[in-house]
Picture 1 (cartoon, rainbow, N blue to C red):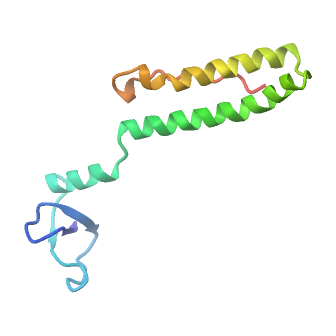
Picture 2 (picture 1 turned 60 degrees about the horizontal axis):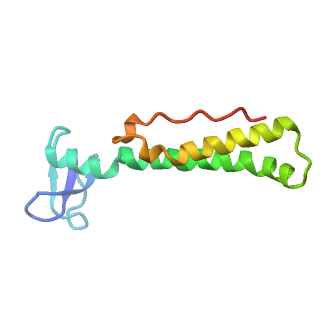
Picture 3 (picture 1 turned 30 degrees about the horizontal axis):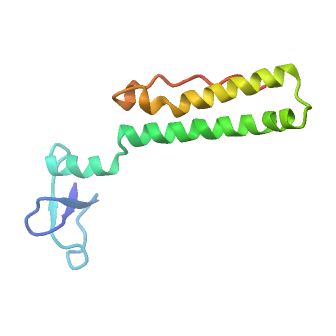
Amino acid sequence: MYVQFDDETQAKIITVFSEPQDPEFWPNQGEVDEADQRYIDFLSLLTPSALVVAQAERDRLLGVAALAIAPLQDAVDLDEATDDEVALLKNWKTFRVAVNRVSQQAAYPEDIDWPVAPRLA
């Protein structure tokens, strides 16, 4: 594959191409293979870390919980909730607290034991 390095030292890849580009617009080009450490380093900057992925999952689950909690809380606030809705509201709030605590649970994000969401109703 063809790459553009940040300068003449060819220490750091900043762009990857499938074929050579016009050197007037893309200076400091070179060719590397997939095993080249400079290419591996370049890819690592593009791949989200496990922590970023875990934070995105946490945020997604918190959004799911918020959407489930809102109408149940409204029913409780209006004194129109059934016993099942009150119990479900408590389950969703318990789930939301557990999701908020996942960052405290594991030293490594890939070790997180994600809570299971309650049934939707």
